[in-house]
Image 1 (tube, rainbow, N blue to C red):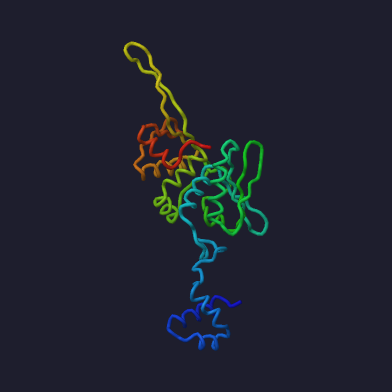
Image 2 (cartoon, rainbow, N blue to C red):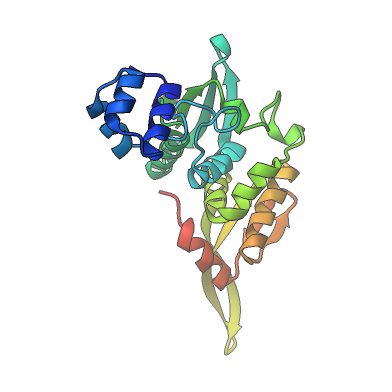
Length: 249
């Protein structure tokens, strides 16, 4: 095996036009290795590295989704050797949501599997990594609604580029699509009308504000039906959310 510096120097020499024989003699590797390096450039990022404190890659779409899930039903807990567990609590009634949470966690941290731990009435999707606090700096003691929740600039940029996936994570955690009804008088008789709407509930005013901002980015109208509950009820707005959220399953 050759270290990254030797490989980089050999590849640079090939790029300058130096012969394979010359490079092989200078660095002590065979020409087949050099041809392989030329055909398959070394990755520019470390798959095991942290996207924030080293050169790891952060897939922004899955991260935006995972951030929404974390703000809704997620937490970090510290284990031995500075390893943290990211836990996303998922209702067992919605197996698709469990699969999506596991897929998002695996996409962001592909070096380790996402575990599914069964509990009473729910499944926790759990992923272990020393660097989860780097990706979720909102981590802190106590419930989220009892502390300030603000996104860092780099997180804001990711959400701004992927508002649909961020909202999908939020609504999959603390939201729902429900059927409401009302009555109207038609030719002197009451008539019942049903219509769908989306609801998002969260005790944190900061997280609620993040949901509102993401909806505003997409020009989707909303209103607050209660201090802790947001509603999207206009037909066109519901259709927009149906395109990237939809009913839970």
